Image (cartoon, rainbow, N blue to C red; front, side, top):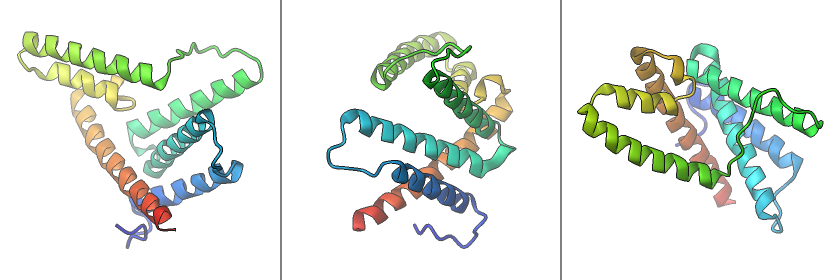
Length: 175
């Protein structure tokens, strides 16, 4: 896949442009060094993840519920961090968990929750819809038709995001 697509207004082009600009800003802040601590590496990972999510949401613009929800979540998180750095408390309570413990909790919840409900429910749509609502940003407030439409678009955007990021990684590995 080539980053130069035939349509400069395509989702892939808009995302690639925004994401590369964000990566340049991250790199200008502090270039990668061989003596980076695990904490610095994790902070860099978080910045790149936020840049990818924000770039994709801005590329979609406000046409989709999931993009508006993603931008709102990222702005709120950024606001809380700024307030915390100033020594003030945010009015929004935050839950502090490590990424590993959060992932483990989700996996345990999904496996036990899924087994119980699929046996009791007989494979109904309700359980799957609730799981989708948890996965798609802004999905909590959607009806089933909108949820399925947003999910399909979100998957398309995530696929595009992976393709562009894979291409960027391949280009950097050639250097």
